[in-house]
Amino acid sequence: MVKGEISINEALCKGCGLCVYHCSRGCITLSAEKLSPSGMPLASFINAEKCTACCVCAWLCPDFAIEVYKYTDVS
Amino acid sequence: MNREAVTKEKICTAPKSKTGMPIMHCPGCHYGIIIRVICEVIDEMGIEGDVVGLTSVSCSGPWAYSFYFDSALCPHGRSPAMGTAIKRIHPDAIVFTVQGDGDLGAIGLGCFMNALLRAEKLTTILLNNGTYGMTGGQMSPTTLLGMRTTTTSEGRDYRVTGFPLHAAELVASMKGVAYSARCTVHTPANFQKAKRAVRTAFQKQIDGVGYSFVEFLSACPPIWGVSPVEALKFISEKMMAEYPLGEFKNVDSIL
Image (cartoon, rainbow over all chains, first blue to last red; front, side, top):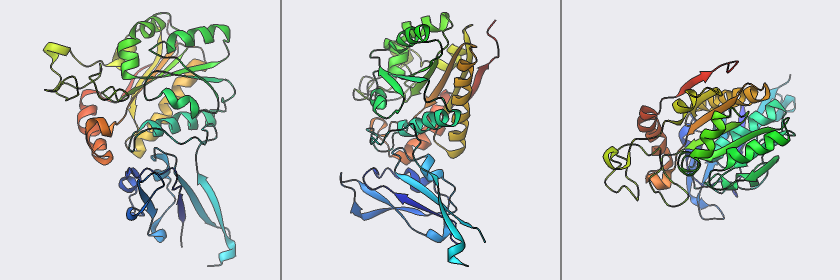
């Protein structure tokens, strides 16, 4: 099942690529087509089924652009 | 799987003591991560009502806009002096200063050393990126030997400009110091260690033991002339070879 999800704030992301480097599951990529309002490349969330909501990308994002959500099966 | 039995919960977002102001630093700069370390520790300790943050003349100057607690800008290395004044008027305040390597090691070294000698109950966070990032990449006291900057175009030579400043070791040798550590935020494990170091530093001040000091090695990719990911490698290979990580002093009483 899908364990986690992240949302990337496109107004804050500067495209430094640290989240792409630190994500050990390969869930984030820098998209070449999409640019942020200030003209920077944007990080985008891929491979949603692999995300484990470990929060490493959010901790090490210098621009506070990432929020992490965790799915919990309560049944 | 029953879709209705799944709850979606937000588990990581910006700390409460950080304002919504966008970070003003260059892409890949570690200063934003260090803001998160400080704000998360303050949130976890529940001291946001008592804490006073003093920023300095460096790229950390605009951090006052990012803090939801009391803060002030003390230009040109005078943060420890202003912190002394605040601490003596309000002894219950928890005062920390954030200083760059040029601010603490060059222009403000006198104020800093005198605050150490007086054993003020302050916490200083040093941001060591090995260069004057704000003014365009001149040599700073912590520039590595052989590192090229705009004022040492052939690399830093100890016969002309001396040796790098090891602030954490220097501080640990002073008698009025309760805690001295050096950490980085370039890996997730070091991020957690840095949070523990900052928490211990604040706790030493709350307990009234003495001066506490935490040095951060941080990246400055535009001035170093490398990409943000290559800057992580530069920290682990070059910076950490010159500046070893760890705790250099951790005492419960300075006497």
